[in-house]
Amino acid sequence: MIGTPIPSCNTDNKDDGIDKSLNYRQEMRDFVIEISEYAKAVDPDFLIIPQNGIELISEENGVIHTPYLNAIDANGQESLFYGYNRDNKATPKSETNRLIGLLNISQKGGNTILVTDYCSTRSKMSNSYLKNHSNQFVSFSSRERMLNSIPSYPAPVYSENNTNIDHISKAKNFLYIINPEKFDSKESFINAVAATNYDLIIIDFFFNDTAFNTSDVSRLKVKANGGSRLVVSYLSVGEAEDYRYYWQEDWHSTSPEWMADENSNWEGNYKVKYWNNDWKSIIYGNENSYLKKILNAGFDGAYLDIIDAFEYFEE
Image (tube, rainbow, N blue to C red):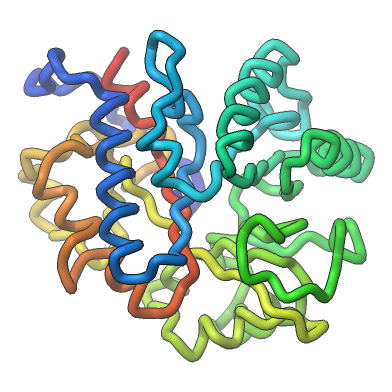
């Protein structure tokens, strides 16, 4: 999600048309697997990284869901040590331990774990990096939930190196910056990110309404110290955003069948019935799909957000 979270007048009442017989977790697994198959048919090295929803790696009976595990290359996890209930506050230990148990399963299956903690004091940022490192997780400590800036601490970047990063398993650190509001132009944003030595960059596909092109992405793939790195595009698959190219203005008054309620914390973001084929066709499978645009621009992967949308439909 991009933009400032603004309370909405919508109360997130459930849509009466939702099919309660569906297995919402399996529908999301299937969706991610389909996205992966489509992308990797175009580029076998393309990375698929779901954020949150780590519960999907196993069935309700605890059996590992191997097809899902094999379809992804990494797991993104927010607020593992800081930010679960409030930014700059420690996540409850019980929740941290539960998540680590699941993340370890994915890691043992060959996937890299990318953790974003939300903390602003230097001591907590350092503690986040140390705790994640001890678990062999790659981490990023963000001072702001909005993910709109390049942190000045630590300097140099944690585990900075000049290694050529040609696979996500080699990444020692990453930068997550999907909201470019502090930059006055796409060029200034590219220059600022290019001047860093992060091994992996997660950005939005658009700078405001202008998409990054192959030349832009190529520039971002080189660290300031000359090493190569990976550049991944953010992609929300569990919510529709009314500021995206695919949005049709009349949807504000007449919602498509696949659209559910507006997110009460993020104005302009709408829950979607992600198992619906019309929504899927917006995300992947054709030349105008969001994922195809990301592939065409030369990104190394997609960072899939709102994977945990199944929780909304299960409630």
